[in-house]
Length: 230
Image 1 (cartoon, one colour):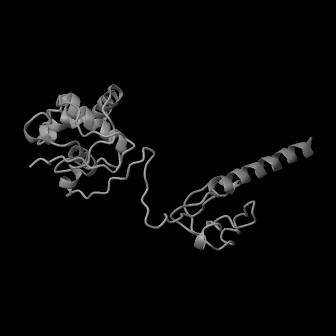
Image 2 (cartoon, one colour):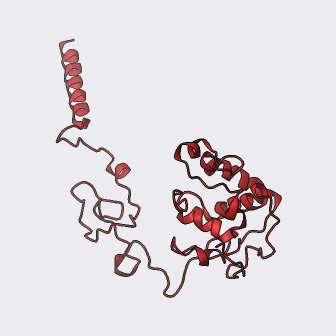
Image 3 (cartoon, one colour):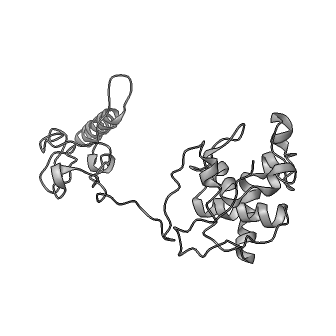
């Protein structure tokens, strides 16, 4: 019985010691019993560790290299990201080029037609996106009377004045790069969704007919002869 109690006591002390060793705090980082669960082997695009022994003190990977080794041996110079092919630019899945105009280049942006033809589905998607991203400031009817717009003030009334005659490309550019009190939304809203919002604003809120120069998505390089608003 005494031997059994002593064994249980020793086991309990050992278990408590192991659990205490896992605890991190202050200058103590704790112990990692499965370090590869914490330190991914996957390549980090913005960092590069070429020393194969780095992290070997912690553990070794299945390929025998140190835990922190992070360099793609199949790429030139061990780079984790390949440089794009010279003199090329990326196109998205629809086949059109990225929007690279600067914020002040509104005149050039006004010449760009929508690569998406207006349709019932495009307008339906545009309404949903407008409600999600634009309604707060511009209001449901686009008159600048949204709840946030009432507080901020100076929000554009999309039904009034020169706004009615703005080309599609102008509106797309302002959504992308921002203008005045409106911040840039290019990083929050995908390009396809921005064009759908443009169609909803032009065809539903402003009640305009589909632009005669609309082009199918396959033709990404055409430039429509639209005169920008003064």
